[in-house]
Image (cartoon, rainbow, N blue to C red; front, side, top):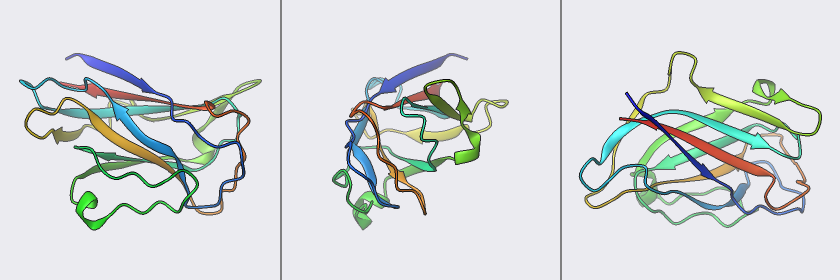
Length: 155
């Protein structure tokens, strides 16, 4: 079994967010698969927070490109896009490991517990996602690159 790690850094605002807002735009996880091997498993995700705000954040994953919600707008995928939803991963505020100047939260890898199967559309090689804030969260990030997402995929 091989596990591939794909890192994406969304561009986020440094103005205050409201609960339920999209954090950044479309996340493209390039080369998740090949045109000849379109299926796999999402087995984990790591969210790094350089502002150390430790917010409840969701990562919503799709098997094809979708129309993302604008940054700082209430997250609202269309009904058509929702049909292509693979999974939603939840980074709980209490799950973050806080370090001196930053923090990180992980979903999965406790025995590879996620193992969410997916199959991309014909010719597809990327997975797509978007982050959004949970209820009660109103963070202000320090820099536009303060959140980093690592997605782990296995064959």
